Figure 1 (tube, rainbow, N blue to C red):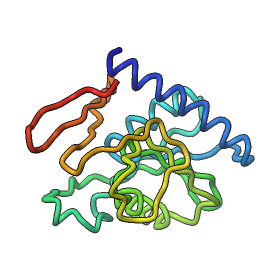
Figure 2 (cartoon, rainbow, N blue to C red):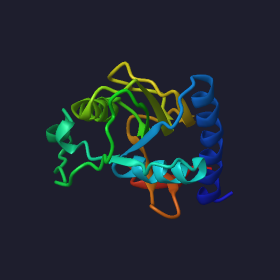
Figure 3 (cartoon, helix red, strand yellow):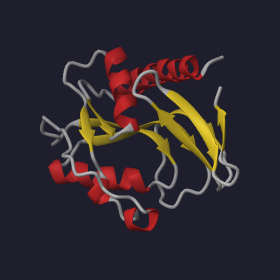
Length: 177
């Protein structure tokens, strides 16, 4: 089975879970927001299949990260794209990989700079189920995996979306599938 089919199957399962979650909680016309870059790719695919009317938003959380200097990250200066008021809205926040929780914390900080949503539902393609640093958990998960500290999962895209696991020490890559 190829990675492209694998990701498509996860997206399909996530769409079903989102429909069930929003229906059970009476969330009508939720606003979908993806975390740049991988989360935005996933959000766009989910958004197309869910057929939401309002375009998905996109967050660039670079300046909200508390760890970019320790990771050697160089924040890319580009604005977030939220073209609607988030006050009292039900937000579906989408990211590609949930690991330490710091990206999601940063994304929520930025969302609250735009207003006070009624709720935030966290949707992730992959949940790395170990090494969480902050008490953040996803409501809807495409796939949970446990990796060693030297392994990293990465989403490649935007089309087709493919997942890979890289071992830093050996620089080897294995496909998820």
